Image 1 (cartoon, rainbow, N blue to C red):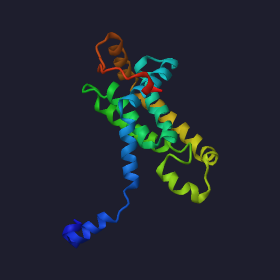
Image 2 (image 1 turned 90 degrees about the horizontal axis):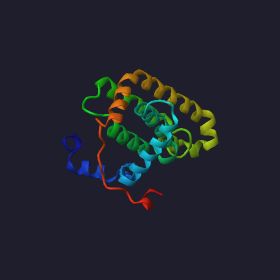
Image 3 (image 1 turned 120 degrees about the vertical axis):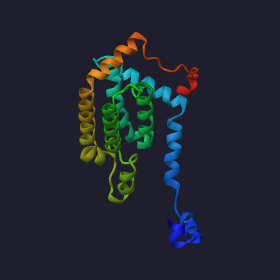
Length: 195
């Protein structure tokens, strides 16, 4: 549109004068978060936490992915948390037979939880990062004014969607136990890369 409206020179000049630092940073973070060692490590943590929750395996895992992983956005950045959560959900729950309502509700809750889950600290959420230094917000301020409220909302959202789709998650869990639902077998990640 800019080429049509203003000409090629103006369009090229506009593209050349933009600052691409933040998009490149987000891209790099997402690529690193999607690497096999990081994904395997994240899956191990999610499964470890899920074992403590007194529900069937699929329900506990789903709940942890939609609650704990978005809160990690306060420490590992929101793009990294979104990448981890989305890929873990895709591996375990987003099968072709999954109901569309389940998929849409899950994505909706994931987007909301990632967006608010990064407010526990002053350095991970891009909107907070832009104003934190100018307004003198530190991690203590963020947590006491926004973070704990966001954490409560994240858990309420995760509990709600998990409860709403408890029957489907129970079916997924029984398929996992029976071996009907197999996960991909990839080469083992060397232990030093997981540390």
